[in-house]
Amino acid sequence: MNISKIANLKFFYTKTQRISIYLSFSTFVLFCIGIYWGLFIAPEDYLQGNSYRIMYVHVPAAWLSLQTYMIMAVTAFIALVWKIKIMEIISIQCAPIGAFFTIIALVTGMIWGKPTWGTYWVWDARLTSELILLFLYIGVIVLYSSFVDKRQAIKITSLLSIIGLINIPIIHYSVEWWNTLHQGPTVTKFDKPSAHITMLLPLLYMFIVFNLYFLAVMIQRIRLGIYIREKNSKWMEDLSND
Amino acid sequence: MINILIKKELSLYFRNLNNIFLPLIFFFLIISIFPLVLGPEKTLFNKIIPGVIWITAILTTLLTSNNFFKEDFNAGIIETYLTSDVSIEIVLFIRIIVCWIFTCLPIVIFIPIVSILFDITFQSSIVILLTLVIGTPILISIGIFGSALTLGLAKNNILTPVIIIPFYIPVLIFSASAIQSVSAGLPYDMQIYILASLLTLVLPTMPYLLKYTLEISINN
Image 1: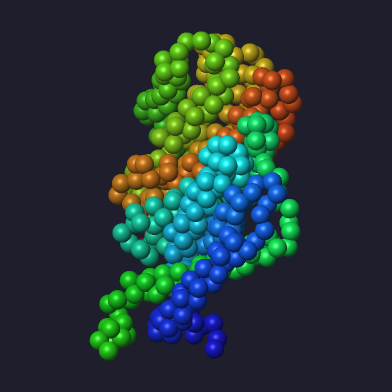
Image 2: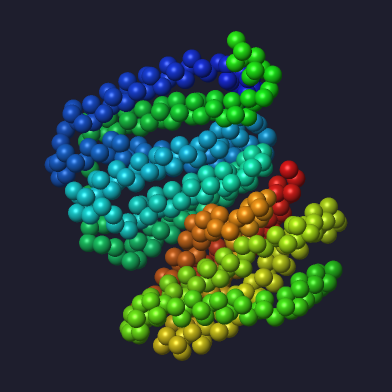
């Protein structure tokens, strides 16, 4: 099986129907196992008590929010340069998933902030750059949806997400620098949870599960994107008539 | 040929003197709204004036660069440039510079008056001037990039700022902190160097990026 075959829209659409169902189901089961592991089996933190357990959702979501932006920009670049249709679809479908991860990371971070910092929100470097990341995602989504001609929309949004990828490190370091200069609120950073292996293992496991979730949702969304794009083509009509 | 292009762009702006005065008047209007909202105590202004000046500069550059290509696009001039022998990168570069001269340079020139109005010290106003001179070309270029991205749309009034403002953040952070550092008596040269490096990154690459964006916006 070579790359050009997977990149074929029809091939992808017909072959992934089963895979996506299995993947979604197994992701759900693995997620439940991970939640149980994180919430009940992992040991209590000596400093933060039980409240640290939200980390098992918060940290993977934050990682995935950045990783999704990377994937979006890289696939956008491939789509612009080599004009591979499926890359265009992947790139544009990354934006809502990434925005979702960013919102999850922000909300769980706020919930976690209340018991540890005493307040829901501080203008901490990481929180602020995560918020800006959300704005970047929203920009991509809004720009794509405001075009009527979707071919042009994909090219324009690809360009925006590539420029955004160049800009993310600049934003990140400037925000970090801004925060250290301003000497933020009294509690800026809590001590990192001691990286004990019994706490770290569930975290890594949850990271893998979140990646699986990303993959499952991604395949579903690619299929939806292919359907919207090819719904008037002959093979799609044949497929739906069967 | 470059001389002709510069002359043409300048004469387009000089034909209507509103082009020079309106951004400046807008700048002063917004600046003078802040005392009305926040109260007249001058001690407060010393703290917030860098932010106020930079927010106002952002609004001015956003509004002036929002429909930067619209008229030329509707008249078919951009297509003519793209298909002709003229290097459109040079045209775009000149247009960015001329746009900066007519929207931001008046603001920079009138900063001494702003510093009289808000009791800014001489040294602070020098740094404000410096950051504006280095920072506003970056803002203008990014704003023009945003207007090129949304060129294919019929209505894009609020869309372009929503997309573009996150890209302004580094410039804002370093400019505001340079001004705050000088009023706190701290060294500010590092922030100026970073701003200058951003400028040297953005300004030469922007014409090529704009050309590519315009090509996408037109070939559809």
